Amino acid sequence: MVQARLELLRAGRIAGFGALTATLLSAFALRHRLAPDNERYDLQNLWVGRWSRALLTLFGVDLRVYGQVSPPKGCGRVIISNHRSTLDVGVLLSIFGGHMVSRADLARWPLMGLAAREAGTIFVDRANAASGAGAIRAMTEVLRRGHTVVVFAEGTTFADDEVRPFHGGAFVAAVVAKAEVLPVGLAYAHAEGYNSAAFVNETFTSHLARMAASPSTRVVLHVGTPLRPDPKVRSTALRDQTHHAVQALVREARGLCDGR
Image (cartoon, rainbow, N blue to C red):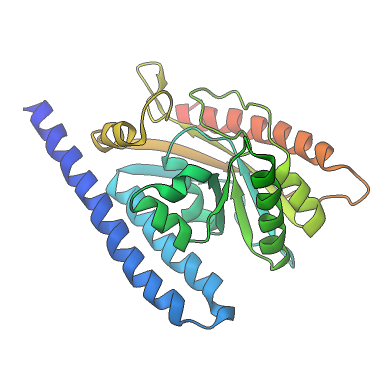
């Protein structure tokens, strides 16, 4: 009986995921194309926020946010977070909005690729220098408009709480655009001694199916203090300062998530 209920839950959530994404994407694409240029970013954030919050509710995500969440003052903003699960995207977009920076092959995925493109995602192939340079230019441009960019600077997902070394492109863009950097830390509740929400060594389809069968998932998002780049300091120093801050926030988030 338990297994049958989980299979029913899985099927319903996967169907709901597809229907939710397709429905909101169609409505957003029409509104976005008809909107004046100066309203499109706010419209994007409105619809992406709706999609993200509905997605988290659909998958039973219990999101707990700690720290001050406020808009940047007179500048663009780069959100830098550790990366552990596909749910991270919905978590961060539901709180901060903005443009995601994502792996280049996502643009070719059915439905999700189209949704990502419509939502203003910046795609990057980290193995290609030209693609990396283009992503830095794109980030710089949107930051100069006062927009938000969300970056998983580790470059991929990992299962534990150790924050791996950061790629430097987002910090170059932040320095050039004079944008603030906001470090945040994510921690998921452990099940049977490990982070069951982690997206590691499996396909997106299998990960989605596994998460869809989980009754609920608790995640803590801990927001740090904004960092403003010093034009006299190299972007590598900003990268290292942010890495240190994110690691500390992840540790705090883990304690809050586990009730310590």
